[in-house]
Amino acid sequence: MDEHGCSRRDFMKMAGVGGIVFASGLPGCATYGSARPDFSFVQLSDIHWGYDNPKVNPDAKGVLGKAVAAVNGLEQKPDFLVFTGDLTQTTDNPRLRRERLVEFRDIASRLNVPKVYFFAGEHDAALDRGEAYQEVIGGPLHYTFDHKGMHFIVLDNTSDPAPILGAKQIEWLKADLARLGPDAPIVVLTHRPLFPLYPQWDWATRDGMAAVDLLMPFRNVTVFYGHIHHEHHHRTGHIAHHASTAVMFPLSPVGTMPVKTQMPWDPARPYHGLGFRTVQAGTSGTEPSMRELPVAKG
Image (cartoon, rainbow, N blue to C red; front, top):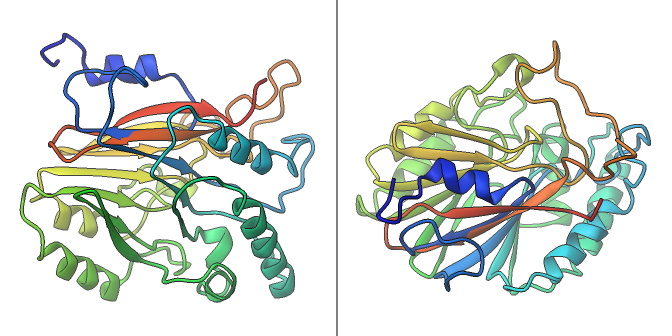
């Protein structure tokens, strides 16, 4: 509970559902548009371009364009946007994999934001260790960047089909964190959850807690991820982990189905469960605040 009488749980209830994230250094429980944040960014996840099942999404070829239009129409323009993996639907055909990545890249190029960051999901990278992804999208599979005093760390827990981060990447993370002070504001971006959310559904990273352990000495850490196709919030100690909804199709939340299930399209509520997230962020030590938005009007 903060000085304005608003807990984080209360804020999440007000934020609703969807997939946009805003980060703000402002205190209290400010809602979108009530105050000027240090900066904002957008998270889109699980695009699955090339997916084709009209019973689950009859607008599979249209939702990415609708999400791009929704982001371009935001009243508060974000500083940047990040795609948190599974840009395309998996395929055993290397040629088709590259074609899907090119089509995704071309549609994403319509985004009217200053900067777009990409990284791969297992659908993009697990079958060839990220070869096609790096050929078409370009850039490393894991990397860092800084924005207005905040340190962003992109971790790759998808190109190794195990799935693991691997010893080399964990050592890389350790070396990167050694440069930072304990109060440094850090955002970690990854596709799979780092903690064992539900390993039997592949909702885990086998050595992900090794990365969490390295992050624990830092007081201001937030993790954003995708993969599970619905909004979810979890804590490992003081570190908050936030999953985003998907652009292409929702999956059943843990415990609601005997097995992981793609949720069927509801004609009465088109695009229900599909969304993106805006995040307001800042460097004052308060947690980022989020707003979830739909990819299209139902």
